[in-house]
Image 1 (spheres, rainbow, N blue to C red):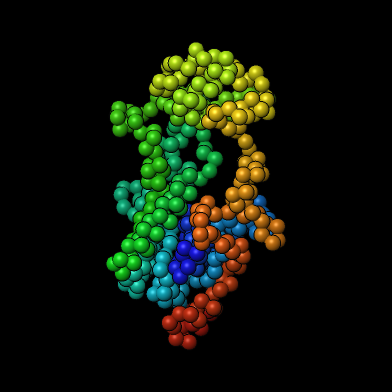
Image 2: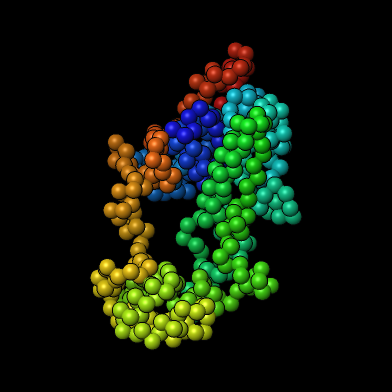
Length: 389
């Protein structure tokens, strides 16, 4: 597998860091998860994450598989000594403390790279390690709000307020950027022998994902008027429409061939000219027609109507429906282990060296003794570390 021989020390909790390190584990990296024995990984808790399968939370199962767990109290002298010994052996460290915490603990990049100059050290935080917002506490929704994305995430009908986005986009985007940055730094290390510090901001991951909506901001020095913008409700072919049974369908492509196929198929070729130009007022007659038309039949009726037509569209399905689809299973994005527990597959696919996913989950500190035995420590140090947990 692509990452065989790479060892990762994962100090992170919840989602952005663990999702990145799990992808690395799925593709061959050895991932050692550090857990505080008094306060282990929060996603283990059924109180906070009640949906379970096979005795583990679904969240934990799909962010922590294939990892080893070492229990260390990083505020103790013994725990810090163990971490420094680990840092000498690993290739990558991933942490998601608030800025300044790692430094106070003595486990920041400067401290650990002094033990291992080739270390790639990745910090994931809400707003980054520098700047006036660096100490602001925030999780996904707050960082997405700060990036201006909640403001444009509204229904194209009516004056509804901002809507919570259905997936934690800053968590996951920052996770993928972290993985990209780590792999870049590892590649560069092959050429120079030196590691690097990777500073990933959840907030900036959302900013960086916004080039297609920044026209009014960069080109006009103004906030977008949503109903004049192609991706916010002002384009007939990039919109959401209700059906007769209270379901919805989405049109998702405004290329001319799609426009012609839709409006000619619906008997209104005269509306093509309204839709081929920029989003905004010219689209309003087409949008009004489509709202009335799509409300005339059920979702299943429209699914049959769209079948075989060259139009970019999809029914708006529930999360449950999405994960039942034959396509999801055939692509390996949902699979079951030998005990019948469901897992999210790897979205990174290679024609050779495919992911070899280990679905086993570690108990808290399960591998502590074995990992400690691998380190360059005295017997006295080993005993003090094990006694401290």
